[in-house]
View: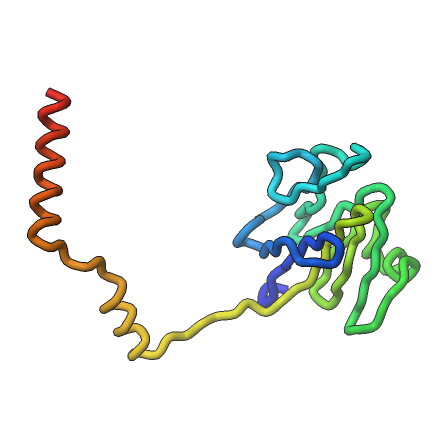
Length: 165
């Protein structure tokens, strides 16, 4: 599992809304809910979805999805669908906690319009050639200031100093 990273995707009516990745967007927990202050907001006119719900938990080095009440779960292991009995017998699904394993993927329907897909992916590492590194060094610098820009900068600083004094 150390060479793969957990990725969660939020879908609204089958359309991708957002993707988050382990260590980049989250470290040990993630929240969803109907509150407008959350990154993953569930718009629910019936007000049945909680304002803040901890959907992702990290315990003992493993990630778990905390399934909301009334959600449905579909999982695959090595591209073959598995049922809830398989998950329970192997200790992957205990009560409402689904242990996320790097050999499995799944989709959780948390609301009639919203679903969350999880999967473990190989991180992409870009290795630059020496020529590409040289181009970056040349173009990463800001353009030199023109004489007029230097004069304007000095005048603005002097005006600020005179205004403060």
